[in-house]
Image (cartoon, rainbow, N blue to C red; front, side):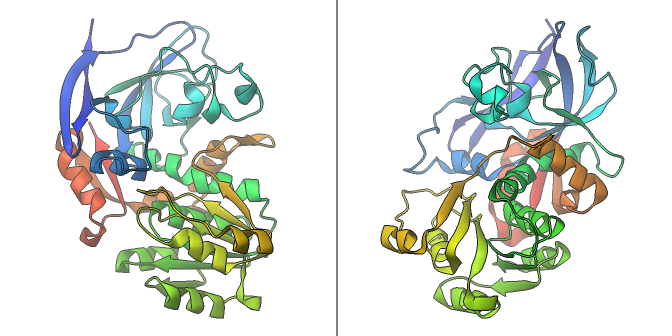
Length: 351
């Protein structure tokens, strides 16, 4: 049987590249040669050690939990109809590996599938065996390796669609990493009236402006909350999107900034359990949505809508790829991705 490479996270900050069997195509599957792997914030959590709030972190971790892919279809089964050999695709891994028949799949939320396909093999690997369901053919404006960034962008796109953004809303985005910039750009593309973004680093502030932020607030803490409020009509936002997590107090800040009966969309992941002021939340009648992934709303999947936005450059996520490094240098790539002071926005690994 043919072999391929697969990365295993054997311990915090330690990878091994091993040989495993290359997957074989069957009637209703495709083989995708991966041309770009993204490094997600969740990958960095696992790499750091998981944190006390994360029960998913265990070692060794075959594949190292890679899930952001852009690639090329190299084989297609005889029952496959939506894609063909040679197609460049962005991969919605959750949809492509879902069973397609459980209640969550049929409701349009394959991220919560209860019958995940047995042949699902993800991670930092050379080839993926997938169903065609979650494959999205790329427009010419998106390079194959850069398509990996569609996956993290789909989460804030989904969150805003779930919140029912209709146009004219005041939106505050806490954090200007990949998720924060995607949230800001998507909010603008979907008609938000005013978008305010907090940014810690110079490169983040520059990108925030390029992604349509009306106001960029530097720094954090109580002073930044008051500055944000000073730029909002009525001193409060209709929607606040939290994208920082880690050890930040941003969930509480979001509660302070959102208006009564407003919404807080939570995308960040924390390293420890985070307190929430229940009295303030109840008295303001705040709705919290925890939106780590995406699904189908109306006639379009969130992932497909994201690829469309990237293709039209209404949401030019591909511009955030600042570092492209070979898979063999995955350890160094994670160091770069983790240290924002080195100018990294999105690090992509290529074969």
